[in-house]
Picture 1 (cartoon, rainbow, N blue to C red):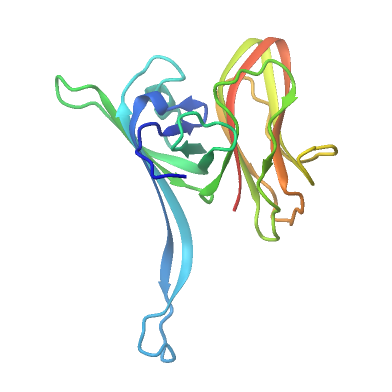
Picture 2: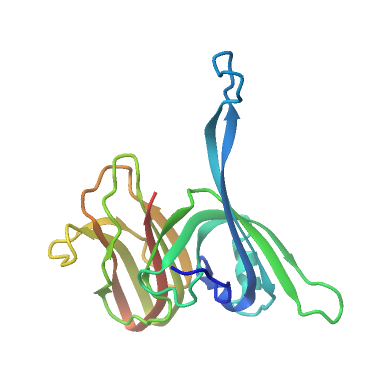
Length: 245
């Protein structure tokens, strides 16, 4: 990947696509350094890694009046832990790099001086690890029937690590529409006998969920998102991200 000028960062907060209302997205992570210096440290400070944390800070143009707008979503999410996903690629296509986490929407700021374009800013602070993975479903492809996504060669999950999965349902249409997404793994890219590793709760409206496996080793190296859709003339827009941490 070549050097990148940030002109198209994509950001999803639960079921809200913040891309068209954002002009700054900043993602950071850190590990606490705990002083463990002692008389055997040779005169040098000695530290151990403590608790990890991550933070996503964003700002942009304020809009309200619909659940898909930044103001409606910010008020609904304030004080709640929701999934966040971000990418430097506006397409968020399958295989594009994704950073995602479960994070608390901890603050929200809006409005400015007369004559200014109404702004917003806010922060989300991690409740789960920040995961570096890949998008497993593109946000712009409508799904109207049960199906499976494209396989990703993300590798095996070693003992003590987990497969993390974020789901952002951006819109739902039809009569009593319902979508139940799941994470499947396989020994190879044929998915001849896939194994379900995690299943999201059935969704009937825009919203977000995040899941992780239990830490047991998984030798399968190929992964994908699959979904079951029901209802009368249902249609869903959603995106999903997968990653091992």
